[in-house]
Image (cartoon, rainbow, N blue to C red):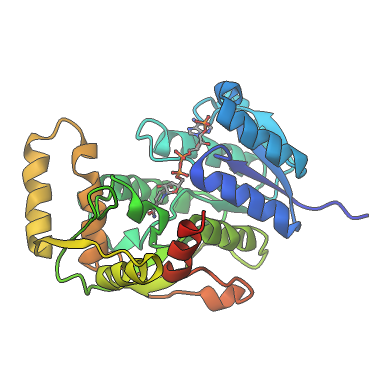
Length: 305
Ligand SMILES: NC(=O)c1ccc[n+]([C@@H]2O[C@H](COP(=O)([O-])OP(=O)(O)OC[C@H]3O[C@@H](n4cnc5c(N)ncnc54)[C@H](OP(=O)(O)O)[C@@H]3O)[C@@H](O)[C@H]2O)c1
């Protein structure tokens, strides 16, 4: 029996990485090797995730992308690397640069960086703290001899329900938005981004390319309408101001903030509602067997759990 190519995934205990791990194992085209930090394995909920992946055939290598010496063993014999690390500013650029360096030495053929956002290439430095890091790391990536495959998927549907984005407040029964609420934005759920990632990483034809996927291109008001239709619950709409007011509120916050996390949620809203990071080359049809869930289906699944 021919052996399958190996993919190294970093971030399997995370929100997205765990979904990507399952999608790769479900697809079955590649062997999954996961780089895990020792401390993660001591956390009960993370341990549960690792056990579930082990049961499905994943193997693990202990390491940390901040520790270059731990990486050669992880990348040895690997065809492709996926980084699904979070946005820790201490490791986002430095750690992925280590991982890329190790991948280069091991002759890795595809490197998927932890992008998973809107089209950040159209953004300027200063527009969004997290996409600034992506822009900086992309400069490192394109100098490397390892071919990159970047995935941009707009906003995650799940994140729209979080206090971080502060749009839905289900406890208070409110829906807050900036702008007119009819600006088109791109959204995809975690499991669908994971399915696209599993396809991309197994696709030998890809090199030095950015692929865009979006389950739904919709407006904030249509998102609310989908929620209300599915749940039968009406939320009180709160218009917070124009898109220009949103930008002004971010700039004001920047002047006094102790940390970018005080205004980062608003920066995400701004890159969505200003249209500046809008996806313009959505390529869902490349993997037309994937049927990504719409907001209507997403809310419907939530209300049935
Ligand atoms: N477009 C959107 O709306 C949106 C929303 C959310 C996230 N995202 C993106 O999705 C990607 C993944 O985010 P997430 O929320 O899934 O992240 P997360 O839940 O914070 O998970 C981060 C993962 O990276 C691992 N990790 C962190 N530092 C590491 C290191 N030094 N060495 C090895 N592993 C390390 C963590 O392992 P441990 O268990 O050891 O900590 C964990 O498994 C990010 O690019 C994020 O920006 C996009």
